[in-house]
Image 1 (cartoon, rainbow, N blue to C red):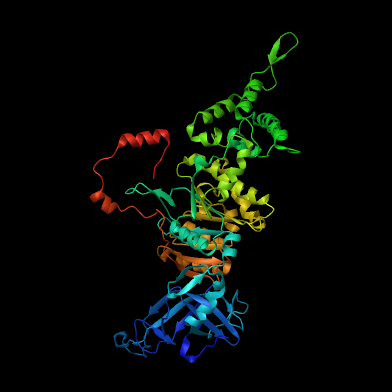
Image 2 (image 1 turned 180 degrees about the vertical axis):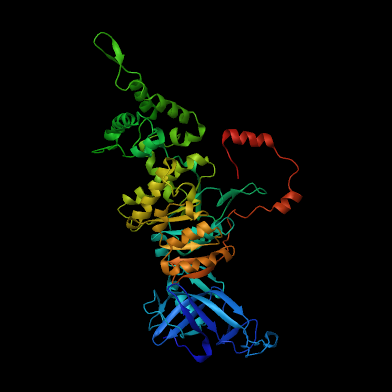
Length: 567
């Protein structure tokens, strides 16, 4: 039971709204820093992000301070008295704005939601480390501490990993707010606490694995044996793993007049080619989507034959029913086949038979050699316009793996998507439809099959609303853009929307954490990851003083032409 005493009383509620309250602080003496002592702890009253207890009869509501204001108090002038003669009261009026978070039950446990709102005149009490600790240590037994309270550095913040990873989460924040910093910290502490974790991380910028300029050795944002680095192009997620719909999106322009005929012919011949693997693999049935090898060259040859087929007419050969229908299709396909950026997808060198699927999946989920709880799939070498295709395949592989895994409950997977707005957009443009559908499927159904989703983005309002709406935990770092703030405000639980006002003032690696994985909505300073990712800002001042005098521009041109980017 939480006891409130006269010694902890700091003010009274003066205004009550559904989402916030105002309280006037007791001001016994003029002071620029109102401090109250509870036990041996000095508490600075009105500190942004601190907690207070509002009591009235049996109601005990927990609230967070989001604003503090102060104004001078004047003694009213008497009739006929000049304004210059009005004496300033040495005591200022201090007011704090409070956002209610929930209530404390009779056992002192925090419960989300407030059944009975306090009214004006309710007492506002400061709370000490013992009460705060009792609430924040709710998940302490799981040992997954990720940071501490900025208002009390001795108080660790524990997340519930089951809720965080199993019910999806999002990390949102503008450039430089510490998203990669946060990801590295969360994953480092996850594998330290849970060594049998299975995490797939999509790294778009090579921030978690890079070549050190001084030693020329590969560096990781994780200790040895924790992460396995895989270049997306060398991993080879081949065309024959794609579903019929995904292949149509890749090869067919649905806006063409002939698109309906193309898709029908494409489906029949794709199924025919896949059926060639039925006997060798000992399968009873094969569908148009079964992940078995087929020859893309054979498919193209069938298309060419149909596109130029002549049939016997009454007196002479005439054009077949689909003669010329595939002219544009063949041009587009030839263009992709001649583009080296698509080689890892359309011209696989290793994954060129059905029996290579097992090895691909082992590498994908961290069961390959060497085994590692984290698989980093580096997409930095993949051209920007091809990334959505790769992301779609990775997302579908993650879901399909556990969907068909009879031990999915014993083998949960987490797919963590960096810069998710780049391939899971809010708008349903055709270029990104495959990736968007794959990730939205995980967001809506993944929890049933042990597939968790984490999305990281600097532009929340450009990210799929369906994916964000399914996230159970929001880790919001500094966001100053009004559009992004408004978008996030509409996605978080209604009772916590007023907490969004704090986002603009957060420091690097500091977030407002809300949702199922945290014991209560709180401002968290994440621990600094060790090792750190390669995401620090470039020091323009230093490099413009001590930077190189010349560059090997020929090498840059060569890398550009070869599409080989080094870190």
